[in-house]
Length: 498
Image (cartoon, rainbow, N blue to C red; front, side, top):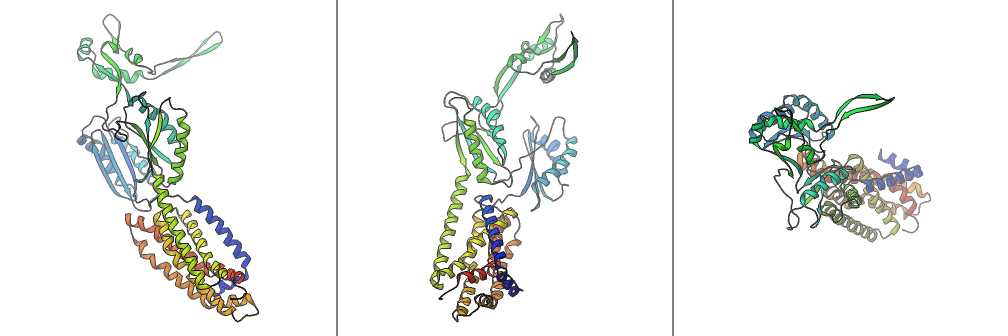
């Protein structure tokens, strides 16, 4: 079979050359567009459910929120672990799925079960899904520097209402988490004595404020052949609007306003943490979380470009400073490994030229290296494997063995061509058939040497499988190239005096 493949390739050499060129160009495209990261993503396929139950103790949150959610999530298909955590006013439920489960399929199934279990939760409690990201999704962090002109509350408002929404729209960004500062809040401090004097309960004050913050639609009124739309404007826009909310009437029919029984002020929301910048004091910032499966370098680049655009709209004196940028780590890791690959290629090239003592023959042998690497990137791209230190390390391991078959075939061709045969191409076919099958199978045996790595599971599997995949692809590509394009190149370049 291999002998027939060699003969068919040489006889249809123009077709094989064209196909090789097409594969090479596609390989270059995939290599330039393959997602890049420092290390493989070792995270499990998980979906996080976050539920807020304000003011409740952890035991109450556990009994009324966390337990019903975890019980329902146990029935989700392919869920292997469900973990629930209860805190003061907060509930977290982590659903860990089996390896290979599509993340977005898992999220859709969790949403189906949430729709069912939400009816069993306390009134007003609504569970939400966490971002479609993984544990290594934290790719960029920045801080807002306002100098002495702006306080932490003003900077937090800029972050929450301007930067966060704009940066969330960047392709590849799953979430922009705001950290530090104070969240602006309207605070109503009631006077119990005045409430008692007017006979108004605290619950009534709460419900009245809640119902007052809305617009009410009316009907149409026709006057003078013109229609007018009637509606009641009730959205709260300032502190004075809250102060003038009527709570009822006294015995004389005079409205009782909120400001008569309470003090309305603007203050910070209760917080349980802070952000500090280089020991200079508290700061306000944001964390960029990358979407699952996206290209980290591309996402960070787009975020930086968006930040440059947004800086033009910031108030005078406010600047954005990077606090963490993973692109530096990625570039250093990939550049270091890329340089080692280049060094290895140079060493292999020098050794091949020295021992073959024929530059054109060495070129034929070395052709399989870049071509095999491009084929590896092509398969990586369509399989969804990132270019990282592990996947590129697999290629580095394979480089030394990728040229073995080509060198042996060239040496055998030299032996036949020393006799100066009349039919050059027939001699190339004959010499290739002699050693081609054995070389092909020997490379395939080396290719299969990493099969035990594919049996690894969980995090160790996610760490080492990219290395095994790329090494296998590179060796397999070298084996195929050795019996297809290499005999053709030998026919064109291995000529003259040997």
